[in-house]
Length: 124
Image (tube, rainbow, N blue to C red; front, side, top):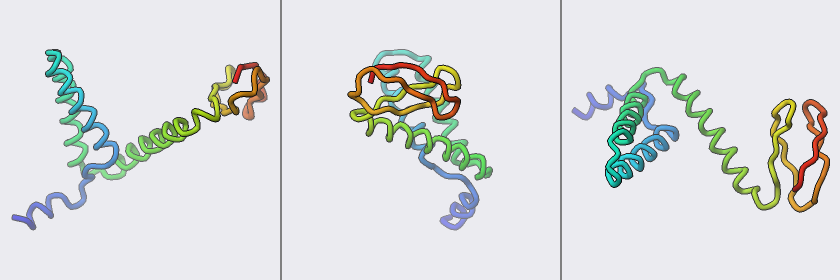
């Protein structure tokens, strides 16, 4: 039986970081929906749980790996911004929407976008 189970799971995606995050989010939403009696949230959490398990059993490893890499890059960016929240401020260029990082505590400064060269003034 152990060998049959191992053969079944060979070549499948399994639970990765995106799967773990979705699993925790679904479980939290499920508990909250049971506490407050909102059945719509419970059914949405069940749908997310089904998606997690289907994703874990898929054989299309490349597609799941690409989704996981996109999630990891997003999560790492959020972690970096959270760590730099005390020393820097983040703004978006009004023209090209490029994200810019400027040091805090400099007062009102003129920011120049590196991509398009637009100038705009903000308080840091």
